[in-house]
Length: 268
Image 1: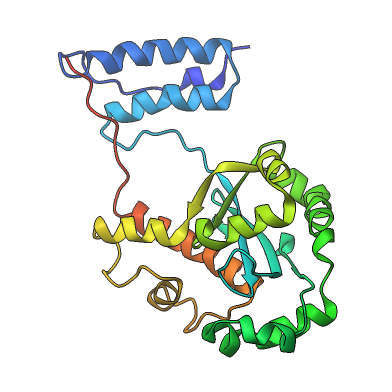
Image 2: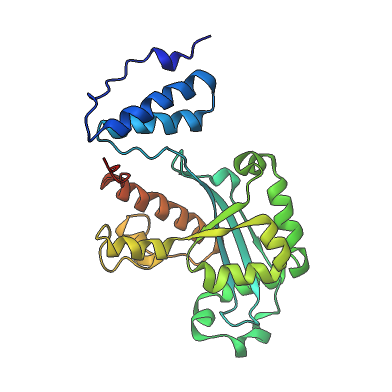
């Protein structure tokens, strides 16, 4: 049975020196359609056609991310993980999957024991979380089992499939990834998570350079205000993970509205 795609009328430009490569590629693309139902292959073929009409032509292939946030007792190597949250981000549907969001407290020493070692910011912002983590948190040794259980949930397995998970967040390399590796072990971390990550505040700096965002939008709190998401950061793992997912969706939408890059024009 002939593919219905072959019945489409494709308004190809008259072969000239400038677009003869496009015509050649379109002929090849139509041959692909005759022999395959692979959507990605077909989309690549039609991207050539779209480029011939002067449109953006990169194939649409959205990535699914896991927005991660941790709360800890500081930035030092001996700090304690006290809260961990995951929430998936679907770039195709442009949504933060709150139905798959999770958060847990992780047990730490009591506040009075930790207080002499805490920096002023942690003392003023994180006391309630530290107290709750000490009283209600799962054991540090149970974090890997908690993460395993999350990835075995049917909705999570369906969302990510068999792919390694790409993490999204803020200042990932400074705190979240090191403390997550410490809790899970380097081997487990590398088996479960992709080495690619998306640091939202680093992306924001690039967008400032490209004049897509204002010059001061290089922190989570500034981005939240500029994008009218909320006035202040809440400093809990789940709220921060959700905020980073929403920020990333919004700034990518802003970039798309400015127009995506086009492939270089083939040489004649």
